[in-house]
Image (cartoon, rainbow, N blue to C red):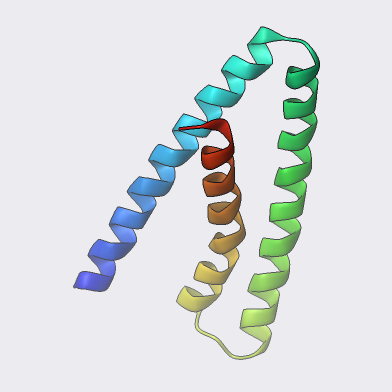
Length: 92
């Protein structure tokens, strides 16, 4: 029971963090200038890197006989790290 509640709380925290990062990034991009260009470029490169890392993690987990739940957790980790790092960097 507690595992499901922990998973729900983690999902809610991830959604909240993602929402905050999106809002702060949009404000930075809307200002324009060199910071906006850098932010847009970084945003795209981070998404590609996180996807590649998640894909490798899920394939590796499944190839070594891990459960689907464990594989999903491994695939989710790169996105969680990226969102938390951006939240800290953008100051929310």
